[in-house]
Amino acid sequence: MNDTHEHPAAGREALRITTLQAHILEQQANHPGASGTLSWILSALSISAKIIADRVRRARLENVLGSVGTENVQGEVQQKLDVLANDVLMRTLAGREGVAIVASEENEEPVILRDGSHSVPRYCVLFDPLDGSSNLDVCGGVGTIFSILEFQPGRARAEESLLQPGARQIAAGYVLYGSSTVFVLTTGGGVDLFVLDPGIGAFMRVERGLRIPAGNKTYSVNEGHRAGFEPGLRRYLDWAQAHGYSSRYTGAMVGDVHRILLKGGVFLYPSTQKAPEGKLRLMYEANPMAMIIEQAGGKAMAGPHRRILEVPPVGVHQRTPVILGAADQVDAVLAHLGP
Ligand code: P6P
View 1 (cartoon, rainbow, N blue to C red):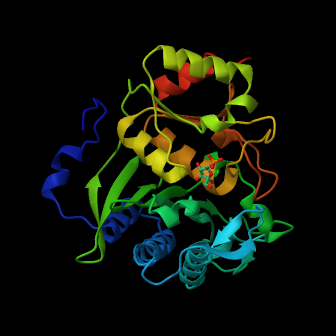
View 2 (cartoon, protein in one colour):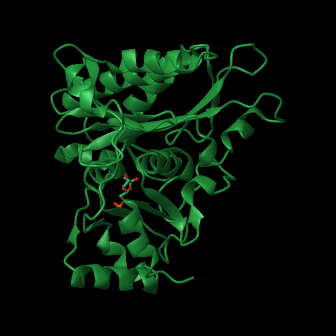
């Protein structure tokens, strides 16, 4: 860890064996009023990640690569593993008493599992079950992104609980199925990193209180869309290329964001003429990633003057432009954008 803001426990991390499950219980114990409901939900996400990781790694052997020939609500071709990952998450979360509503990129409508009348605190879980799934056929990194909001009983329609700005998230994180399987989690007190030990089937905590390094001159954007970018963004790209920047882009947000979390740099999926609101979805891609990035000391913007976490949601599948990463690198982008 090369940051002066090191988490107090970071230095001693290497001496401990802490699983994700133990970490979740540790966090619960730090909140005396906690009922354990959130812990059970995080535990469901952990087991889902292990099942999905196993199926992703065996996909070609089991012939579950490729598309199912249908499109999701986004009009995107669904990969077989998109549907499988969605099914795994739906089935594990359905078994948790504390889950009131589930919303997924793959489902047009949210799934109302329980109402809020029960005394148990209830939560809404939103997710992109397999982000970047078009990378699967070529063995590229793919991931699961999740966001947890408090259920608000008494709303006229239960799904209105989903329409809360990202700043109201209780927890957020992602799983990256890459050269190893990593689980990145924040519950509002910093960002912690876990790696799956396939030998024992447990996520092991390897980093606490991650902080995004400054000074990494790397940007991550699909430059094939350059002609549709606003002039200020094209000016930024010209400036960056004249100042020794490198470009890294995997085509899967989870892989690009994970690199930025560990190494710094900036990720952009901006608005274009064809897609004025950008491509990425606010509720289950931009918001959870923005919480992770801000909790690690970075910035996550929807435009020159608006944090992603402040964007008022009007629909579960709405999209937003995204500029996120190390604060110094996001500022360098914003300095070139118009007012
Ligand atoms: P493009 C994957 O489809 C995704 O939703 C994100 O994970 C990724 O950052 C982006 O779209 C890639 O989009 O237009 O560059 O292929």
